[in-house]
Image 1 (cartoon, rainbow, N blue to C red):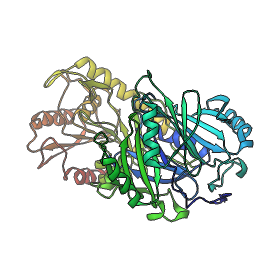
Image 2: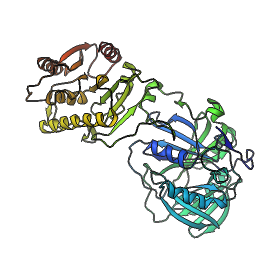
Image 3: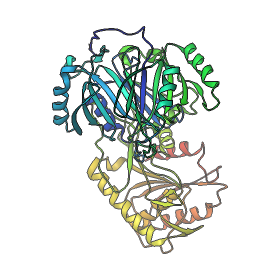
Image 4: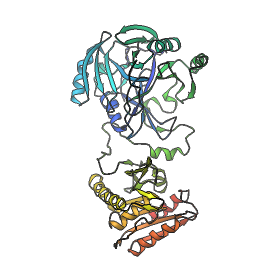
Length: 525
């Protein structure tokens, strides 16, 4: 990968912005925008340090320099947030003063939402919206340029670095005093309701008076925090010691592997991080290979299982899965060396489309996984069909959702073209219950099925010919629902299905013996 060489280096300057962290609900659209449209480099991909099941992406210049880093927590399919008081509301990126016209034309060509140009603090600003609705300002600021990756964007028009962020504070003066006292910014010009703070390198914090604003609501399309620079871990700890003297400031120091972090909420309630410049992102990848490998936090239990649950994406110009809008929300996991097998997964009560992916991956490491999400909810719990009480099932809803599942697999065959001889469907508990009912109500919906801890949920069982359908039923020896599962297995056998029934030394919950049992059955197909 080539780079656009910087016009000036600023490694000795530590006051300023280290990174900004935001939230996205669509990882592929996010990558396409920040790498494909803006021309940044994906410099790191990790599981989240607060929740390893949350993908965390880092974009920046070629060398992943502080001052260029924009990071995203991926809440795939998550709820939309609302920028408001106590949040970062806008992210500004510096471009060359003569580049505004280029970027306006590029936005129009790429159909990126833009709000036109304006003048702010004597600089020309082009406001854009990223796919989640985050306001991205391209600002004609004469700041030293960092080295950006080579792309279709001419070097003279490349993004230079982070210009600044806008903070919405209901206590503007207190916020301003706090940030200048502890984080090395100095007061700058005032324009209308905005007080500007300036760092050594020249990037800015714009503190906007948000008195009377609605409070911010976290979610996709909002910022989580802004991180300000420290030269090293010692400086972070020094600032933490000073902040602890304020009874109202709760501080937390964390080892984020690539930098040491201090978190604190300023008086206006915006979350501020202080992050050390080192050790940096080349700690576990070479400069040339930054962003190629998915890393997990060191204390992640069963990290390989968690990796399977994280949403996948492709860089611009790479071959990718093009998702279609089908009946059920769904997600694919594609292994490194797919063998042509596709396993569709129906979660249990309270689960989601990723819950069964680790189990299925252990059973069939080279299978492509297709996780589905049930559409029914009870008291906020995700399910596949309604119930009226313990073991009292809504028969109309079972039949309706069985029909929807049948239609979904028709859609899958048309949209994604899985090999019909290598398509397997696996359900657990409530998901297995719906799958078992759908097999009886819609013979031929699938020809290979795995039912984990199922029960018979149909009050009236139709006559059906399941010849040619191979089914594995796995029951738990101490499962309270074992008898009802055996009834379903017997019913499927009586309809001419080729049923293999296994009883494992487990309860209703899944255990270590399930994956080997599934793997053994798959090997015999």
